[in-house]
Length: 271
Image (cartoon, rainbow, N blue to C red; front, side, top):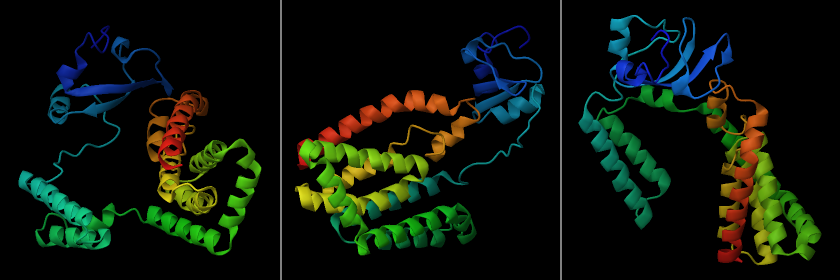
């Protein structure tokens, strides 16, 4: 690979891996990935294929900073098909109305245990308890907002201030507030906190509640303005060498486009 760029050296074909980012002296090397000439000591972020492990061991060209474990996601391919079929059947039962989502979930987990596709310990390791705790706390806050009349008060305040400008202004303000919340806290918490307010607004201005639910859900999920708003944003923050300004510069147009499309659809279909 000496004096050859990543593309010229056929890195992908040689190692069965694609270079995502190159860091040199703790700084990201700018330019097209394929045009970068690797040097000794460079830190490479790779997306590897199934053959990378063996090829890496044969050539001795890398010093691995993160240990690799060669393993499959499941031991038997039939287990994947069984799991997929169970999932489709139970989703169909929920859609038809034969089962609730909770009952379908319990049946699915029980079937996976009985068929030994997964174990209770593996299932426990897959549960993110901190996320569940955050969602449960947000649900409590949402319930308090509703029971104390805070949702009704906030809805009245928003309507009285924006009603002269029309329902469209109310929808834009609601989307904007939800989007700000989701940049500061998680999308689940933002949706739980803002939906009671949106529901109260729907009753007072004559918008279908389902429309407000759609607006709140999309606004809470469209987190583009900061790396801390969503897990995926944070994952690429370090390896990509990005800054907060990069997210704001690229995320602001995306936010505006998403807001315009969502508000327009809700206004046309549910008002």
